[in-house]
Length: 155
Image (tube, rainbow, N blue to C red; front, side, top):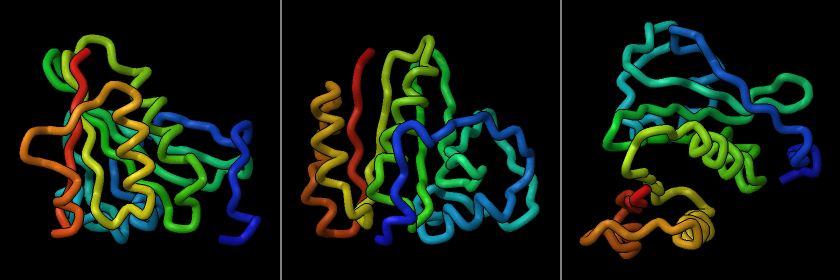
């Protein structure tokens, strides 16, 4: 990774994204992980659903990543994707921490770690330190089989 892709902690801004359509920025960020998010969507399609989108921007307004949040009284669901060139710089962690700060009423927070995430072990250990637990039958060994691993936390 080039030094130009390093993100300073003070240079990251997270804003709500009110776009109702799948835009080129989302397509670029999600291009290599879209199938894991169960998105059957194409450029300029209307985004349906009862969730809220946020995006991480650098100081020049470049989109570094997205997260979407959907919550009810039972489960708080968060999905995050970071542009390939900015992965491993803490953007995903900042988006996750930001998303968690939005939870008001949900009793369970669920996080899914994708097998192709090169930082999956680091993320997994960080989530365990935050009080998350493995979902029974969903151990990290599943990564070797190309499957997602889910962890959860009661709040």
